Image (cartoon, rainbow, N blue to C red):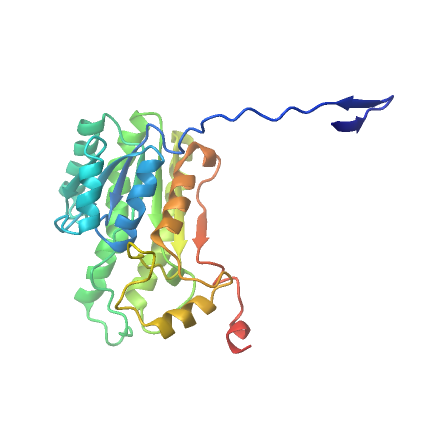
Length: 286
């Protein structure tokens, strides 16, 4: 029983439990492109995003040889395709957009998840070669620009759409000797804001997801064999939530921001770092 007071009397009512009802998946009926789908974050997001109802166009520059990709495509053959694409080439990105629309009839969501195969960590600007800078920026910043250029008109023609850019905590704080990657990810956040500002009135939303250290789990839930347990423990302890992030953590953020539940959210960046950047450096010396 619930008791509440009006201006003139006390009223008693009986509350009946709400009937359980089936919740519609967040991305029901949506068509989503994911670049960098063969990478660990990309392939780690697939199952969750498919469970949320999305039809998926998976894109990478390499063959889908990883067993997780092959298994996913076999299980989801009716609502997922894989396209080998060099997303730094304008004509290739345009063709991917057309392939998506021709296959599924529309394009609702584009997730820029790809990153350069080489990050050139450990090289300061004085040691980084111009072609190495270009290699990172081409994949991590030029490619998202190209995807927006060719995807947005199709989205507008369909009534609107969403662009999700996967950035990094490197965009917000400097790490030792990572100038190209840090600059590219910071630029990606700025590009996200610009797209949101320029195309919001046309029904386009753009948001960024900012992961911290994120590692794919093995089938038994453990971290990869190659990982250094002591190093990972130290990384985990830097986070307010003391564990290493997973691709599923990123997928949940992507699904929410891409869904209609976030229809009034655009131009923002969502940290998925376990609270790492919420802490001051003093936490590490306690």
